[in-house]
Length: 359
Image (cartoon, rainbow, N blue to C red):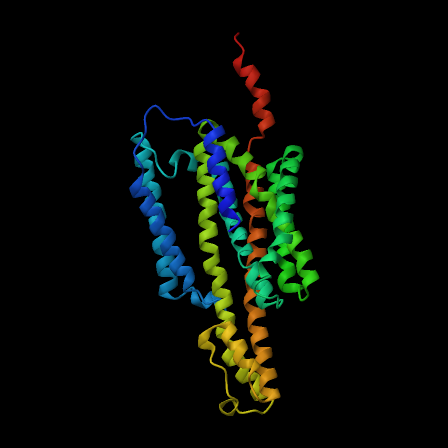
């Protein structure tokens, strides 16, 4: 709800104080390109949804996984060929093909896509606080605050560091800090104060990528087409933000699906037959299972079931934030590659006066 008054204020004040520039000739909307991109994203989402977080590598061989993902990749490459033709005819493609040929722009988009995956991990913080840290549902949203504030500080630090050390250095440092922060969730966090520390570290880390470093890299690569380039970066980040929750939710679902087997295994270790233990029905969701467990009459069965639920919840969220840590570290690779392709802005600046001299 807090977004509504902010959005309304932006619309009102933007209309009053921002002067809109218009092209002398309005080009036709790239409807076909937009549809192809949407179908590519949808196909990849369906494939990722069918992944089994518990047996990730094995599930990749499922035709419902690799088939849809392959279709999405094929659609995306078809989109690139189509956008090339649109641009060559003087149209307005949804993805500028000429920009996509720039190596710096390509690797910056990779980082942008991965940063969308990191933003998606933040979506699950309230449910993590509620289901893993046992915060009440009405207060779970407040536990976004440490990470949100830290990401704002990280964005400011990222801008300052970009001015002093450059965008590549800032991007590498971002991956290291965010990777360390998200790693603490599965490796260390069991108490609320530990969660706050991990959230602050992760927030500062991925906050670096929210502003200056990627914008500087894109602007340097795009030149006069800066607006199109920034729009493409935003689009790619949104694609990552759209696809990643499907993967993360798969980890949580995989953990939840193991509750029944985990309860039976724990009962077997205690010598209690599962068919006599009033097993809870896991079909109604986690809250329903927890309620059923709280009503179990036998203490040994109740403890086995409660421990199984705790273990399944922990497994799902541990895999989720371990994946976020891996994504954070993956941003370091394209950032290091950028160091080889990128021409520092200072060299361009130094070269420009001599280029403008008249002999």
